[in-house]
Image (cartoon, rainbow, N blue to C red):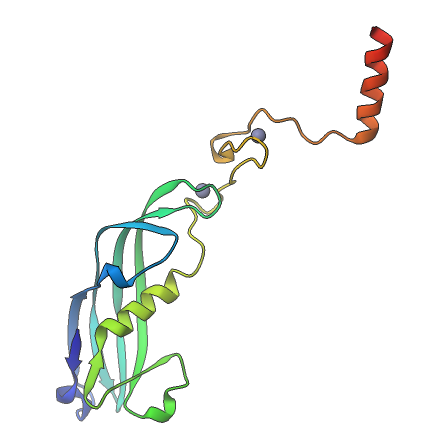
Amino acid sequence: MRLNLCEIIEMPGSSLPFSCELDTERLVCPAIKSFVSSPFAEGIIRNGAGVLTLTGTIKADMVCICDRCSVEFHCDKVIPLEVRLAADISDEDDPEIFPLDGNWLDLSDVLETCFILNTEAKFLCREDCAGLCPRCGKNLSDGPCGCQKEIDPRLAVLGQLLDKQTN
Ligand SMILES: [Zn+2]
Ligand SMILES: [Zn+2]
């Protein structure tokens, strides 16, 4: 979706609201298994003293895969948007600033970029997910597994001696 900003670009104090769905085909992230519904963005572009700022949120309802225990979980994510827009190409190197194409803004590109930057962090089913036992694979968030702790090799030798004595 492209927005024509000509109405606000020359008018400090003016603003333009927007709302749009994101194309899930373009939001590929290994931790996201599926989208329950298309992520939806809404917000406003303001011209504050000649500086264009886009603010708003992306709401995404997803099924994700926990990075630690691999359990699938439901994730309702709200991604805040705060992006500066500039027609001046010399600012292009600044990742915080999205360039305009004349009076046009590629809104989909801005929203997809913000979404992907926000989903690079690890997805956990819960903050304190304990992960899986490296030996038996049990999900330790459900409680401890039956695996014995690593036995001190010296105690293991003692155990063998005791075994011999009892035989
Ligand atoms: Zn987990
Ligand atoms: Zn275990």
